[in-house]
Amino acid sequence: MTPTTPLQPTPQTTTFAPEALLFDMDGTLVDSTVVVERTWRRFAARHGLDAEAILATAHGRRTGETVAAYVPAGVDAAAETARLVAEEVEDVDGIVPVPGAPELLASLPEGCWAVVTSAGRELTHRRMAAAGLPLPPLLISADDVREGKPSPEGYLAAAAALAVDPAATVVFEDAEAGLRAAVAAGGAPVVVGAHGGTAAEGLPRVRDLRDVTVTGAGLGALHVTLRHTAPVRA
Image (cartoon, rainbow, N blue to C red; front, side, top):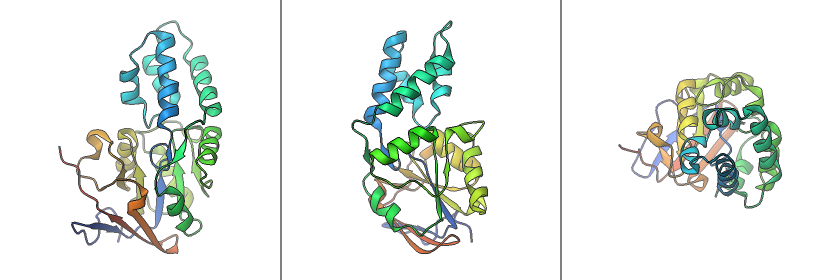
């Protein structure tokens, strides 16, 4: 059975039997909110833009795609993207793990999970290290795909690399773009935290990763329990 439909839902728990687990990074494993906001507020101030409008759409997307959407005419988008990425790589002040992330990752059997992130590979390494989290056995970063989230390309690539059907994965995400990517890939999305936009409607949600337990022997034999989950309604 694939995990697309939760097994044995109750008011207190939802369970899945996936073959593999796929995790977003920012907002899901790593709380980088303060850094993300600092970066985009500086960008907005440099160009006289509305920082709140940028932040409303930047989460979960590749830096270059957000720059391209907002940079004023006449500004070199590639150079501006390179500047922002360099700033992000150097700025790790305030980065912490999402509650429960260290314990959850430490409990996972080897080779059954991957990170699929809109951050580049270098930035991913920096933020995971700053949060005290182990590097994933498989990483699909912004550098490894032609199209970022909400395209499903990253999640499809991760499933292929793990040799599992995308429909047999549970995907942990916090942002609307990532949730749309997970749905388009055919995985079973779980919303981490209080956000997710309209894409989160009707999906199981956990407050953070303290509400997630994973047991099982490894790839192809996992059992996921979400505690105190509830579907999000419009």
